[in-house]
Each structure stands twice: as structure tokens, then as C-alpha cells.
Amino acid sequence: MQNFRDRAAAAYDAERFRQQGHQLVDQLADYLASATSGKALPVLPWVTPDESLARFPASFPEEPGGELSPFIARVLGGSNHLHHPRYVGHQVSAPLPLAALCDFVSSLLNNGMAVYEMGPAVSAMEHNLLRWMAGQLGLPESAGGVFTSGGSVGNLTALLAARQAKAGYDAWNGGSPAGPPLTVLVAETAHYSLARATKVMGWGAEGLTPVPVDANFRLRPESLEATLAAATRAGRRPIAVVASAGSTSTGAFDPLEPVADFCERHGLWFHVDGAHGASAALSPRYRHQVKGIERADSVVWDAHKMMMMPALITAVLFRDSTRSYESFAQQASYLFGPGSRPWSDIGLRTLECTKEMMALKLYTCLSLLGTRFFSDYVTATFDLTRRFAERLKASGDFEVPVAPDCNILCFRYTPAGVPASELDTLQARLRQLLIQRGDFYLVQTTLPSGVYLRTTLINPLTSDAELEALLEALRQAPRNVAPGSEIR
Ligand SMILES: *Cc1c(COP(=O)(O)O)cnc(C)c1O
Image (cartoon, rainbow, N blue to C red; front, top):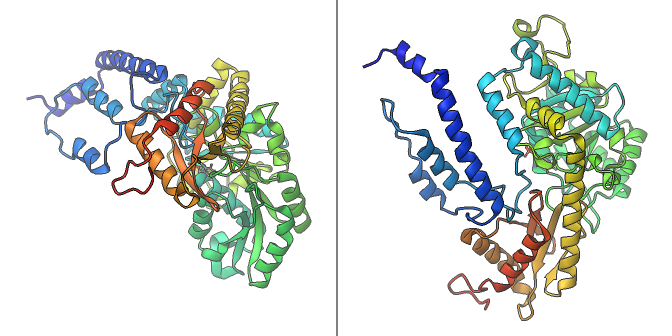
């Protein structure tokens, strides 16, 4: 029996790491080849949550034993395959393998980044990458920000700064009782994380004031005045308007210019939730979708959505970078020293204390692959989605509720002979059948007019032919899969 020091030496042994690492990369490369070929795998190897629990029980040996490869093989076999060209589901990227390698480096180095000394190289990368991203959006030289763990945390971070800037009282130290109750105006189609953020800040249900949307699910700027007046009459102090650059359900882009004008007129903070769609700025063809984003006070932009990065890496950008110190207007003097505000102690401005070396993967991929690749990626996926929408509209047996603004598209199958009252059930049933069979992974959403299939064409390996195959699969699928179904 070895003592602990010997065991520790074995666990940290560089030669063993080299061997396991080579094996693992080989295994993952085989996996990647199989997933991207689109042949060998079901997209999602469907099992029930309980079956999955049984496969990964909480029972661990006391003594070491077992090999890595079979273990990883079980994980690969029980996971959703986002590199499969028939993955057309949620807005989660098929990550660049190069970026995955960078995450591997990040995990080994574990430079936690709260303070400069705990991540000198990656702190510099983060700072300059954010400035580059701000430049892509057309924000001024004064802009800057932080990377954080996802768009949800990003929206909270931005709204905390908005509150310090616009509440008219020190809500950070005084709490909500220190002034009138606050609210933000948000399109009724906005992501749920905005409601979470305002509730986390203690503003309650009225902390979010919904603004109506038009037939294309875009915020109606002409409704802003009345919405503001109603919120004020109800005793709320509106401090900000949030526009979506790519709403989650339909991918609709709110018109940013009129919202910016409105915010300017009323002295409100202008936040853009560009978690999905801020990347449109990278594409000369689609940059017009985010016209006006350069006037925002803050922007959230997920690189793990439309920049092919693995989770997580979210930019929170501020037009005036010093605002980012106000999200968490707090001093932890044991870490940061009294009263100091260096750009380099990034943890001053993030919800996280320790965080991953997020910037590393994006900085490296931009450096090695070039910016053109990212710009073309956005253009190609948006183009593909437009062609798919045209194909659906011409089909006669599919319906597209709104033309796509980006690479998110909702549609439904409306074959002759199925009464309108049964169309919702049909979509849900077909989706369930396709994902359980594993031939596609797609999702669904409920719009005012009913249940729709929803696709995000986020994998650059998805082609027109795959989408044609999706339509054929929907047409060929048995329509009466559930026992007792009235649909035949
Ligand atoms: C995905 C998304 C979010 C949430 O981002 P996460 O990174 O998943 O936390 C917020 N807003 C919009 C518009 C999104 O599409």
C-alpha cells in the first residue's frame, strides 16, 4: 500500500499525463470524425432521466483502479452530439475543436483571474479582446467590460450597473427601501434571465415592465411612451430599456435606433441583450440588424453562441468602461486594496471571484483562424436560414410564422387533412419522435398562434441537404405515434 505522497506523485506524474492525454485526444478525434460525418451516431442518444441516473451512480471505489478511455466512452455515448450536422436545436454552439484544446489548457493552468497576479496573460487577453469586441460593435474608445459566466449573469451584471447609474439613490448600499421602486422596460419576448435579474435585485414582479411587440415579435418603439407613463403612474421609477438583438424564441431583432432615441430623450439606460445576435456585427451582410447597438450603454454578447466557442464566455460591454466598476460597487480590501480601480483586477467587476480563463479560447481562435472566418460563419448560417425559410414557404405543407432575422427559424408541419385544432399536438409529437429516434435534434416553442418547431442553424456543418432531409423525415414520420391518438 502506497503512502499519500507516492500517490500524489503518481496523480501528478507528467509522463502519465502525456500518455493519457494522447489517448484522450485520439479518442476525441475519432469521436469528432464520427459526429461531423453525420453517419455513425444518433444525434441525441435518448434515454430517460432515470436511466441516465442509473448509468452514473454515486458509488466510488476507495482505491484507484479503472481506465480513462472506457469511462469517457460512456460519457460520449450518453451525450448530445452538437457537432452532428443534424443538430439544429438550442442556441448552443458546435465548439471549435481548437477552442476545446484551449479549455484544456485553461483547466490545467487554472489561473483564476480575480486578481491580476492570478492570471497575468489571460487578464491582458481579456482586456484587449473586450476592446476589440467593443470596436466591432462600433462602441467608442471609452468602452470596456468583463467576461462572465453566461448571458444570464451578464444581464444581471449590466442591470446592476444601470441601477447604480440611474436609480437616483445608492441602491447597492441602501437596498430597495432607500428609494422608490424601480423597473426596466423590456419587450414581452425578452429572455427570462431579465426577469430573474430584476427579481434577484429585489424589485419583484413589477420590476419588469413588458413592452408590446409587433407581428414580427419585435419591440414596438411607438409603445414605449405609453408603457413608460403607465409604469410611472403605477409608482415605479423606470431606469432602463432593454432591447433584444436576437430574441430567444424567434430570433427577432428589436429596432435599436428608436429605442436609443427614446432612452436619450428620457435619460434612461439603454441595454442591449445581444447574447445571441450581437455577432451579427461581424458580418458585413447582416451588420444592419444591430444598427444602433453602438449607442447602447451596455451590451451582453455570448461568444458561446454565434462565435463557435464552448460554454462559457460572455462579454458584458459598457460604453463607458468605468461603469463596469459599479455593478458590484463594493470593496474587498484583502483582495483589491483600498480604493483602487485597476483594470487588471477583473474580479472587482464580475459576479465570479474565481473564474475560468474564458478569454484564452476566443483570443487564440481569433489569432490562429483569423477574423474573416468568424464573419463568414455568421453570414453563412444566416444565409442558410433564409434559404431554409424560402424552401419551407414554397413547400405547400409547411408554414413559417415570421421571416427569420438571423439563424433561428420557427415553422410547423401542416399536412392536408390534419385539422387546425390538432396541429399543436402534431408538432410536439413529431419532434419527440425525431429526437428519440436520434435522426435530428430540434426544439419547439409556443407562439401566440400555437406550437412550432424551432431550429437554430448554429453548426457550420449543417447544409441545405440536411434541412431537406429534416423535411422529408417530418413528412415520412408516422403521425399516430402515441397510442389512442386521433391523428392518423
Ligand atoms: C441565450 C440567451 C441568454 C442567456 O444566455 P446564457 O449564456 O445561456 O446564460 C440571454 N438572452 C438571450 C437573448 C439569449 O439568447
